[in-house]
Image 1 (cartoon, rainbow, N blue to C red):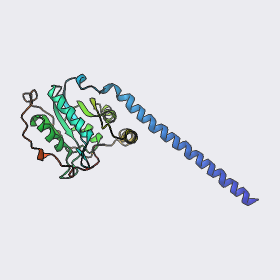
Image 2 (cartoon, rainbow, N blue to C red):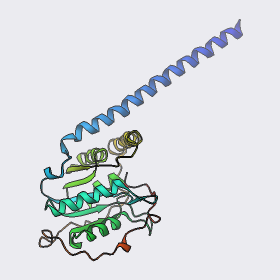
Image 3 (cartoon, helix red, strand yellow):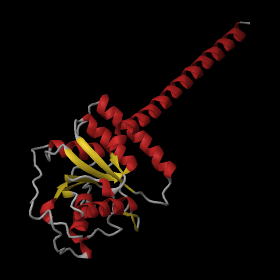
Image 4 (cartoon, one colour):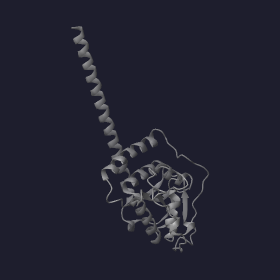
Amino acid sequence: MFTRLKSRLRRLKLGLWLRRMSLTLLACIAGIYGIDRWVSWQTQDHIISNIYNVPKFQVAVVLGTSKYLGRTLNDYYVHRINAAIDLFEQGKVNGFLLSGDNAHRSYNEPWTMKRDLLKAGVPNEQIYLDYAGFRTLDSIVRAKRIFDTDNFLIITQRFHCERALFIANHHDINATCLAVPGPTNHSGFQVRLREVFARTKAFFDLYIFDTQPKFLGPKEPIIFDKASSTEIADASVSDSDALTPSESAATPTNE
């Protein structure tokens, strides 16, 4: 009889433990979902989907990503760069802050973006580089604290826009984001799931841990040459300057 009683107590304890774990899991899922919806709701009024509706900005911050995935051009990269070029040609931005990872000698997101903008005719004087944009948080916060700008346009895909603006709002940065297209053949569910967890991490970075950029330093205020900002310069960058697919294959970037 004593043995049966012990067995029933063990089952009761196991049942209570499973119930608590289930409630904890449900609470976590609800919290993650709530954060995701809050980020979208808080930032929806600061996202522009049509490039023709973008007002004039002094600075556009282009968030970096790999130019190639394996041996294929990365559509995320292509759409961001093309949008940047179009904005400059339409006179909607005076210049750019190109922010991304500089992982090693053969992988340099800001410099790769700069070479493509130079080839498109954007003057060198209208381009600033941030080599320490390892994460979205680094890119956005450094734009204000290092490059002394707190009113700028962000260029990236919509899901990324929302998280970038969420970070900007927390740091009292008056930012707007141009949401450019993403790959048509990419798994939407996979990207969406990854973004949900990235937003949860961003929430903890901002409200729990007060996470700061990996590198800070003296200010380097962005000052554009007004004479150059109104015209397209002749490009003098050869195709050989761009990173090859093998050089920039599949390095995780600016998340």
